[in-house]
Image (cartoon, rainbow, N blue to C red; front, side, top):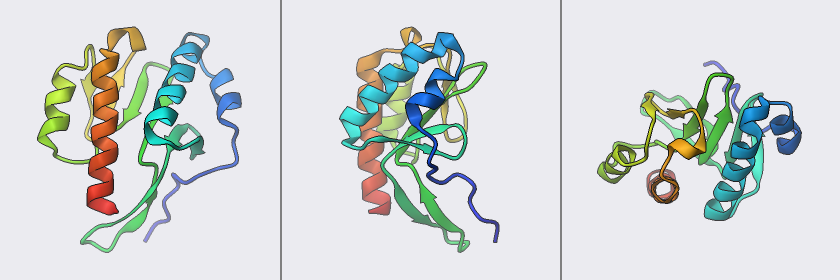
Length: 138
């Protein structure tokens, strides 16, 4: 079975953010503050480009298992990738409907800037994601 390449690294989060697109620096720093406050965890780089908070161990029926950050984001070139969708929770689905100008991926939410989002809804979505991750994976 292939090894998971997305795992904690020694890359410094603030250094990574400062090297990203200048338009994304302020929003990235705001997201770090929000996610650290809500998760109670310090930001850690997961792989070369995901800023993650907390972690959990998963194991699927197929036997595939690994570790992943509980929540996270990546300030990609075109848009941010927000990793807070981790279940088929009706509450998460409802929250995303009111989040703002987004595109949904299979396991993430894409957006261009924080001003496009309802930050109260984002905080609720992050809190719900952390709760459902803990309930499902311990």
